[in-house]
Structure formats: C-alpha cells, structure tokens
Length: 534
Image 1 (cartoon, helix red, strand yellow):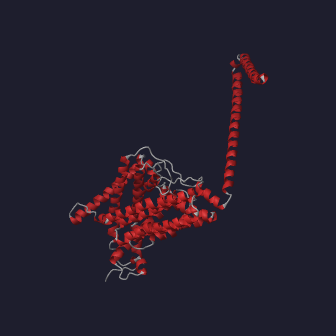
Image 2 (tube, rainbow, N blue to C red):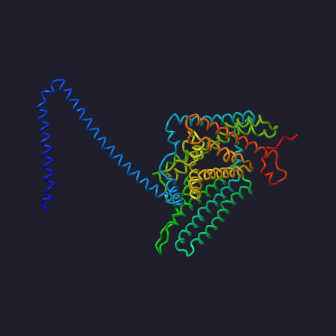
Image 3 (cartoon, helix red, strand yellow):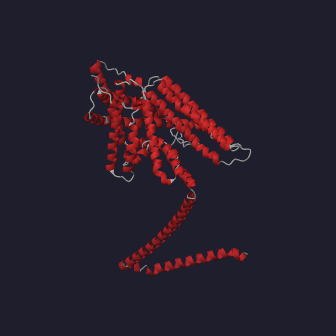
C-alpha cells in the first residue's frame, strides 16, 4: 500500500531531475557556443535553427488543434444523425418535429427602423418625408385660399371616414369581452376535465362544436351585421373588421398552442392539470403578436416619451394620407367615371396613381407596422420588436412576402403552412404554399369588400394569380441589385392598379346607383358599364 502511494512521488522526482539535467545541458551548450555566436555566420545559423524549431512547434500545436476540431465535428455530426433518424421514424412524428423545430422563438430585439434611424443619413430620409408632408399642407392651404378665400382646413372627409365612432367602440368592447372570456373559459373547462372525463372524445366534440358556433356567431356574423346594418363609413369599418380578424387569430392561436399540451400531459390520479393563467391570456390579447406563449421576453422599463412619439407619428401619417387623397386622388378620379372609357385614359390613370399608391403603401407600413405596434410593445414592455424585416432590400417576391408583415406571416406559417405539411406530408409543399396564398388573398378581399362597400376582386387577382406567379418566377435564387429594382417596379405598378381601379369603382358606385338589387348587379363592377348621362 505504501509503495503504491509513494510511486507518484518517485515519478515526480525523476521528472524534476530530468528537467534539471536538460537545463544544465542547455546552459553548457550556450556557454560553449557563446563565443561562436559573436561571428555573423554563426549567429545567422543560430537564428535559422531557432526558426526551424519555432515552425516545428507551431505545426505541432496547429496539428493538435485541428485534430481536436475534427473530433468535435465528428461527435456533433453523429449527434445530428441520431436526431435526424429519430425525426424520420414516422410521418406524423416528422411533421410534429418540424413544427417544434421551426416554431416562433421570441427574443429581445429592436425594430430595424429604430436601429437605422441612429444613422444620420437614414434619419435625413425620414426628415425628407416630413418636409414633403409640410409641402402637401401648404399646397392644400394655398388652393383653399385661392378657391374659397380662407386658410382654414375643414378635414370634412376625415371626419366622415371616422363617423359613428360610438357604435364602433361598443362593437369592439363586445368583441373583446367575448374573446377574453369564452375561449379562455372553454379551454380551461376542457383542459381541467379531459384527463378525468369518462368519455374524453365525446366531451371534446361537444365543447368544440359549442365553441365553434359561438365563434361564428359573435366573431363572425356580429361584426359583419354591425358594418352593414349601421352603414358605417370606411375608416370605422376598417377598425371593426381588422379587430374581428385580430381577435379570431389570437383566440385560435391560444387554443391551438394549448390543446397539444393537454393531450400530451400526464396527470397523476387525483390531480388537476394546471391551465395558463388568466393574466397570461389577457396580456396576449394586447401584446403585438399573434403567436401565444405563456411568457415573452420583456424590457426593463417603459419609455413614455417613445410611446408618445410613436402615437404622434400615427396621427401624422393619418393626416398625411388625407392630404395625399385630397391632392393626388380625388381631383383625378372624381370626374373620371363621367368621361367616355378608353384604353389610353385607363393606362394613364394607372401610371398617375403609382405615386399616391406608393405613398399609401409606405404610410401604412410606417404607421401601423412600425409606430403603432412599437407603441403597444413599449407600453407592455414586449421585448421582441421584429414586426417586419428589411423587405425593401428584397430581390424576390418570395422574400418580400416573408418580410413585409412578420406578425401575420408567423401566424400563417405556424398554423396554416406547417399544419398542412403535417397533414399532407412534404410531398405537398407546393399545395400548402398555394393554400396560404389563397387564404391570404381571400382575407384581403374580404376586408376591402366590407370596408369599401362593393365587390371588386382586384386585390384577390393580384394576390392569388400574379402574386403566385411572381413568387415562383422571382424566387430566392434571384439576387443582385437588378432584381431589387424589378421588384420595386412591379410593386409601384401594382399599387397604381389598385388605387386607380378602386377609386374608379368608388365614384362609379356614386354616379351610377343600382336600380335592381340582384346578385349579379351587386358583384359586377359598376365602373365597367357606368357611362356619362346624355
């Protein structure tokens, strides 16, 4: 036993003696050759020997590092292969793993424009838009002074657009209170009793049918009835319909994220499954995301000056839109339906509408996707501010659709595209993508039809037909500045087409009212046959 314990000490002594002997030998060598190094040739040879020795040592260390890196890469690759094999065990398991791996991950990050505005050159572009807004105001006041002899702007069209606001507020309160109570209580009752129910599938079917009927009646029919029965003006209709869609998508996300947790939960006998807290659901209904999580990354404090600035910019964008319509759209299209139709007039109107159409696109992006969402995120200390990406740098329409509105894209990707892949399989990836395009086109057309008060499927055709075509033609393989220019050209033209055709139809509805209210008269665009009176 003592010999075993003393063996390390003996080895240590031998090692020290060996090192001492090597040091003594080196000292003797240096003493012997000290005089020889005084000669330049000897010194040069000594330097070359040291150089060779250093290179040998460096090669040895580099070889050790590369060997270690190779071992780590082999180990990580073997782990990756194990995970891949486990994911490929079955069709449904593979789909679930895809959904789990590609689910939305929330992290603390700022919006891109907030970072870009720290650059004074980018901030100057922002100042240029503000200066252009001032020019619109001054020009409108000048026209008012010349025509009417006054400098006061009445904003009559703005007041009309937001008319009957008390009815809008009452409708929103009803929609919000329903979404706050019924979906939450339904999921809470089902989740708490599912593991204890004698017939869990029957319980699920009954509660599911009741919830679907409630959703259709309250979140589906009630807003449409309010919009049509009370003949709300366009801006008030937009508020009601967009809130309808937001609450539908949020309630679906809450149920969709929590149902699998209940189905997978393993609860001991006598225990009750803990469902999400009511405060988590309440926070989710207000925070600027459509993907439910029990918790989100939070910022340490609220910058109320930042909140006030963003809300002020939303109000400024609203007036900006008003002056664009007054100065660039209304004078052009108000009498157009009274003139004889010609291809030349239509083409010129489309290209004249590209400028206001582009302004409307940029104003909607900046006011809603940046200012409005960032204001609510700041008030709620919501950390993930990536509501959009750098869509303006896109060289393909596929990338543009992914980066323009990240909030809605995340919902479509997680609950439509991924779920369809799980049901249909990877072989039907194109069918899943087309389904997302069709759904998005239908919803966009639904919003415009109800808010404008007439059916004219311009948005549907641009989205479901040309959008799908451009998504395949201008795909992610297209790179370079030329493709970015092409993307902007088609974007300008598309906005011009929408503004031109929708404005024409708006005034055609006014100048040529329907005499017989039948189906074809309601769905046929009136601008196609509206002609000036003799």
